[in-house]
Structure formats: C-alpha cells, structure tokens
Image (cartoon, rainbow, N blue to C red; front, top):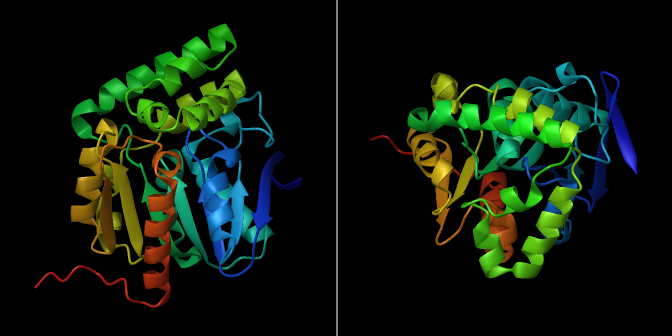
Length: 281
C-alpha cells in the first residue's frame, strides 16, 4: 500500500491505469473501496488515483480531534497530487468529496482540468442547515459514546435505501464496509468536517466566477441535495446538471453504468474544450 504523510498523518492512496490523472474523493459513509466500479471503468483510459480521507483506514485515524477539518481535507487532496507530481487532474467527488472538489475549484483552480461534483450539498440548503448541523453534532456524540458507527441506521437512511431496493448485494457490501469505519474517525469527521464546513451559499461569488468545467450530479430522491444542486446550476456558468430519476445519494453505486457513462461523456467534452459557459445572451 502507498501513503503520503501530511502533517504527520499517513494518507492512503492507490493508482490504476494510465493517461490523464483522475482523482476520486469519497463520501462520509464510503471509503476508497466504494469507487471500485468507477476505477475498473476509467482506468482503461485514465490514471486513476483513489484516496482515503484521514480517519478512514487504511489512512491514519488520529486521536486528536484538531487533526480533522474541512480545510484539512482540501489540503490533503492537493498534497496527494503534489506527492504524485500531478500538475492538473480531473476530479470526481461524491458528497463530502464533492464539497472538497468544489472548494478545490475555488482555491486551486489551476490544479483542476474538470470536476464532477456528485451528490454534493448536504447541509447547505439554508432552510434546513441549522437542523443538519444539530443532527450531525448529535450523531458524533452517539458514535463516541457507543464506540461504533451506526451502520444499519446510516445505510437505511431515506437517501441511501434506494441502493438496497435496486441492489441488495451491493447495499450489504456498502453497509458492511461502513460498519468497519472507526468511531473516532467518523465522529471527528462529523464534527470538524460535516458540521463545521460553511454552506456553499457562502461561496456564491467564487462559484459564479469559476472557470473549471463542472458536472453536477444528483438523485431526484436525495432531498438534502436537490435544491442545492439547482442553486449551483443557476450560480455556476460552467456547470451542467444531470438528475438521476428514482435515485438517492449513492448514485455511483446505484446506477454505475449511467454514472460512468455520463462522467465519461463530460470528461471527453472538457478535454476537447467543448464544455462551454452558459450563453447569457
């Protein structure tokens, strides 16, 4: 296994394939393994890099809560690119990973050649933001008190149950992998990343000025993310939006063939400079 050390924390990464670099960033409930169906597909054309965020084995799981943070996650993603000598990469992020990708497009636009932000925006919709923060902090406390991640509860979430309905075997694998996550890493990620990160609306001017080709993706039953992605589409001139019907949060696992095909078409368009800003005339 390969690692890069960032501020004393060893971050896992693995590579497959060759070609233009393509970095995958996972969601809170997932880890490096949840990109397997994408890596098998895209490594035929791209140099795929999959990482595990701090707190997610085989990356280190720091005991110090101060070692976690949304800004740290951004720096970690850039550090992986630096370690591998990659100047610019495509990025595909899901949920927490989508937030990191959007922040990279604001802070490190020169490092991104294209961005897929899938299932992004949990906790960002202004009317429900306070409740999201409260629920997330309470969830962190429960994990620390019990010493375990409530995998059954999280995997049966209204935006994740769609995977079980479509692919029970795939859902069971997701649930079992989620149960392996250490409570410390998940709880501190809940506190310092999910609950502490600013809402995307706070970055409206930067998102409106972004020149990074961006594909937004969301399931139409992912209630926490629907409104935010419509807002992002209206705000970002370089963004396109695809909505997956009868789909929840885990769209890369629920609909892998469609997810892969839509991402591939977008990346090709971006590489050919055919992904243009919206015509405002």
